[in-house]
Image 1 (cartoon, rainbow over the protein chains, first blue to last red):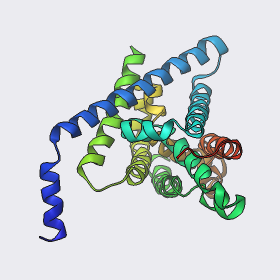
Image 2 (tube, rainbow over the protein chains, first blue to last red; image 1 turned 90 degrees about the horizontal axis):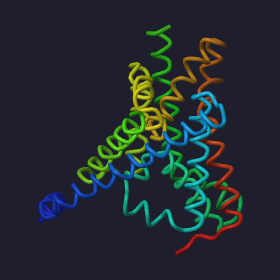
Image 3 (cartoon, rainbow over the protein chains, first blue to last red; image 1 turned 90 degrees about the vertical axis):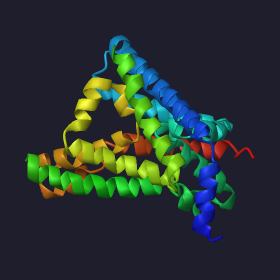
Image 4 (cartoon, each protein chain N blue to C red; image 1 turned 120 degrees about the horizontal axis):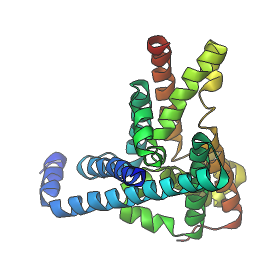
Length: 145
Length: 116
């Protein structure tokens, strides 16, 4: 049996139910983050008189702070491995990947460890995000003026 | 109503990402990069601002919003400074997210050790 056939066999026997359960869990966890975000944005607007655009930026910073803190305290790794896409697709996942890289590589020193590896995981999001944003931005300038 | 929309929108994004994760060989790194670029594409098509209008924070908490911000940075940079603004503007709007992640992670790494 070669590798591809084996892969197919494994996929056949992976229970479909588990995939559905994962997806539903991701839906509720991701949805909860959006819901809480909207609550925070509303509070920032009504109680602190922020413009909606600024409120979104504050929310982003707040989420990154909370996710970084939870990663540093050691809770977030377990949660991400359980909730998967529900936690890594929101901005929390970006913060988690940066913070966990910083924590893990600090033992190799501040320059050769932390410094050169802090974007080890988040680097691809930043690189391809920037390239995509640049190319679509050029298209946007051409087509939408 | 907007709270429900926010729940639904970010939930659906994560649902789709989980389906991709479980049924392909793509890793979370692939998927987040993909959704970021997708965010730029949706912004170009004028869809992302409609998603934010409809779902509020539900659209802005997702990593795709990073792509949206990068796109808007280029377009608004070009309006202000021409070609120079394309380079100067790209990171302007997403600066807060990147700076926050770098600053918080550095100081947490100073004071905490990985648990494992």
